[in-house]
Image (cartoon, rainbow, N blue to C red; front, top):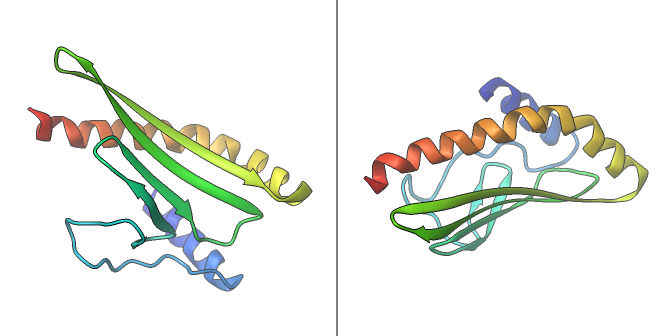
Length: 121
């Protein structure tokens, strides 16, 4: 999905947004308040990671991941996308992107889980 994010970054920049910022303070460490691409890290703990969108949108958007220890070496991973639209344009935006999100979000969740499993082993 790299090219799609690049196009989204150009569009965001063209409409006065932050664009697709790439640079990070540190390649392996991140903290609350730090910029991460289109996002700002809003909350972070051992069981929660929440990003707030800084891109130009007709509403506010968050991506959130949580983990819950189920015992016996099992963990529940939850991914949530939340969008609070502003007006009719915001609702149209969300419904227009729903088919893309229905494809992208499950893939994103699988990749996050796959990347975490070797670390847990």
